[in-house]
Length: 228
Image (cartoon, rainbow, N blue to C red; front, side):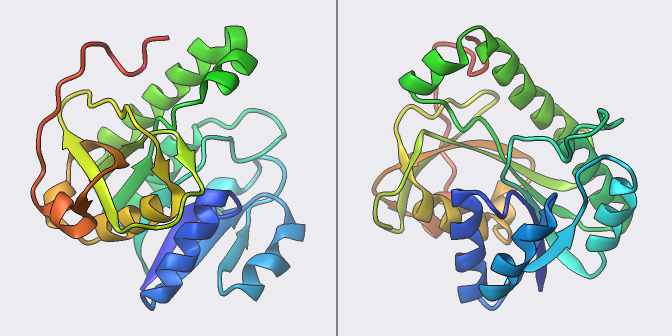
């Protein structure tokens, strides 16, 4: 099985690729810069270089979907540094997956910024949150077996294999989560039937990951996640 990943060069993407490989799955990393390709190959990731601008990106993404079993969007940045693309990364990947017949799509959304990051974003914070919201909408409107995972603030704590998971129309993650546990959650979400067409908040917890996905529980939030 091949899984196409946008965000393979991030810290979460590295953990995800490592976890997929441990499960006998080949990660296919969509990257902008050719100099990242050797490092990805060295750890077993199949790199697909999209280039530094938006020309021809749609065709390359569609080609990368051939033979894939799932797609993961684990990055919040654009696909290139040239002229703005006609579609956002989420919209482009979701459309490409739909065209290629790749049903399972996991979107890692709303990686909430820490207080220091919020301060650094300053006036850009509302735009950051709007981008996350638009990404979710772009995926959810496609004919895909999509799942949206909203992790709490990510850190590098050791893996525990346990999480707290809750579902609902607007679940809000209110605790941190280790990247290793988030990577394991994504891998399980690629095959768990219960997660399809669900938006899930993921934080550190006490439930074994597979059991948490199989027994989704609603959660109540007093405010909308994307409000600043």
